[in-house]
Length: 133
Length: 385
Image 1 (cartoon, rainbow over the protein chains, first blue to last red):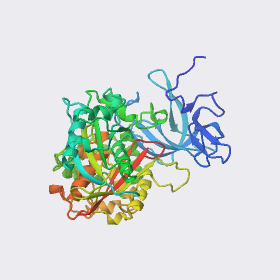
Image 2 (cartoon, chains in turn orange, brown):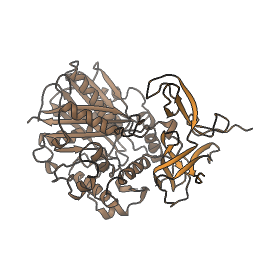
Image 3 (cartoon, rainbow over the protein chains, first blue to last red):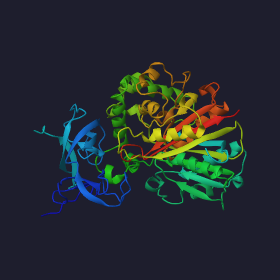
């Protein structure tokens, strides 16, 4: 299997890199259960140093978003960026996979998806999810 | 603020704009010498210098000892020089450290210089440098530009306040009007709301004329433990890093810094006569009215309707023109805000003068981490004239 090069190696997992992947990389405190984005050395809530690496953000909810009209990072304008809240809690900015001109609404359910990039690397975006039964 | 009193006794600047024939050293030297002259001091009277810059390493090829290279040329030698990088809040962070140096009793006189040279004949390189003011592990390579960050923040405000594109056009026009008489300002030509509306969309709802532009420029202050001309005293100097928002209701970074500053100064937002706020895009100014407690939640539209924050209103904001019109040479911005407030508190602001100005606030934010600016800085100045 050809190894894929990620755009943000410390931000997200490919399938097989962590239980529940693909998704974002998070840390879960073994002492208080707090989950945060990225791998951190100490829990920001209780200060404990024992944290497990977890995959989060397989599903998320859209907060506010903006359609961007200036290309950057290989994203051809127009494209969308949004603030997303992962189902585990942490929030972050993320590309939103939606056609130009789409009226995106706050609260829209999203799912993590890998996104092949023009430079051959693999990135990620959040796409509108089917309603869960 | 604890410790010895701190006063702003000298101000100097190099105008903001595009200066292809001037080096960063030249810009910084002009501002530094101007501040020393204004204070009636020579470089030998300075106990320490603190220099602010964000992108010289990426844009100008000088990563280290930036301040030492600037100040060598004005004859400074032997005196300690410290370099500060804190994204768009580099300048106010340098002022903060200068204040701490004097308040602690370790220094009597500190020179603060903020400078940036962002025009490098490659706009893409400058925009890429700006993008470094976020956690690049998280925000790199995802198409995120600061205009989009601001657009999303403004949309969050729009969901809670009765403001729309008309308010954004007004605040942009207001700040261009203010800048028209400011000799430091990059854009000194008034614009109409129609012109703002007709400018191209950058990140919905942010239009081109609402954005602060790439800029070259420098600003400097002399801080002293003794009052100088105008007796402008630093009543508060507060910083806050991006908070962890682990619980609902966690205050925003600018609110944390503002609350610290109000407590240090022992004043309330209602005591202020004017403010300079970080309008990297002009609609963000409206957001900061709330975050800095200049109004309550749900009251932004009323401030706009009353034109309360224009010159002549009850709380003029960004009388300098703000980042949007005065310009935003990143390392200089926080220092330039305090220059405007010092002029106002001395009574030297000319046609921009706020009558009887006595107490003034400056808010400068920088970078992005999590759900807030990476750093927020708030200063409160008072005139004891």
